View 1 (spheres, helix red, strand yellow):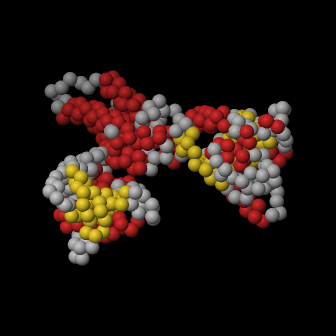
View 2 (view 1 turned 45 degrees about the vertical axis):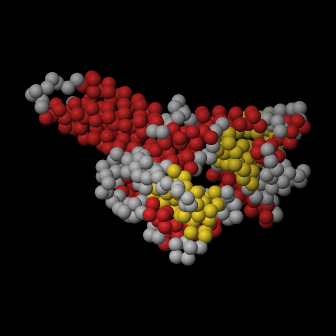
Length: 468
């Protein structure tokens, strides 16, 4: 389905003509937070606000003004809150509809009371992502910008936030639209020869190939950002694995600059997986400190060891930690056999206690640390970034980081354009050239939302939070 942003389209069951929606637009924690916002959008947003909000004096209800006053229950005149009201008239709003926001005192009770009053006056509780969906349907955002909004809300690092902001500002959309326009130009040239073969000069196949190659090069460049996008959005899971008492918990504490894990001289102190969230080179990293893996008869320790083994298998990267004072032991070799096929770094800890470097080590990236002395952490982070870049990050454009949906559409476009080239090589009629070219144009349109189905929109916006 194309033309998805026409005003009379009913693309999702959640969006219906004329309905005014309301939702809490801020994260609300019970008994905490200084400000909570209740947002309304739709034809009745202003009239609902006028029923609930009393603005003393001669304050003008004009677009893009903030009013001071009180929220009151219309039937009982009970005072609910002293608040501010922000007015944004259509089309100069996020959704291109009339939008009002009640800026209330924070905490769960007041904002829920205000939201309930809005619903009693005829508003409907918004579905997840419905405000942004309306912005998309009304032409305020394209689909890449809408997904950028979700990425910005969920950003776990400054770099992820920066990439999301570039998406909102249309950097990816501009590149995709340009590629789609080039494909449409090529299609127009081909179809003109099909329809008016006797009136136009023969098609320059060399020029068509050159244009297709240029488009494919740009698509390949953008596709190379997919791994970067996955890392920035979901982060990296790193498991610290090793024998008991090699300093795994000390390593976590030194790395996170906190006492996340209990550290003693007794082997087997860590009985469960301890997590810490860090940022390394702009990439969110979930660090898992695991129980030392060894043979044990202790039932609690055995459960911890099983969880450690599971964490190692699910991790994106393993930090295989060993004790410099003990060297490479048979127990290390046994454990190493379990993780050697996964991306890993050898961390030789406690180098402050030993002047000898263990020999017979596996061929793997190696870092020397003295976690108890906070030594070697920078080298460890650099080794992690080097490993990630070698395996996953090849993109030169750090302002674009496509998501899985966008990558799938671009791969379809890439395949279709490659098929056009094969069709030209096989000297098939011009009608055959247009088939795959149209597929590529449709796939590129799916990236920005110029070609989109209702089910795809539902799937995308259902991942948003309510209120955005």
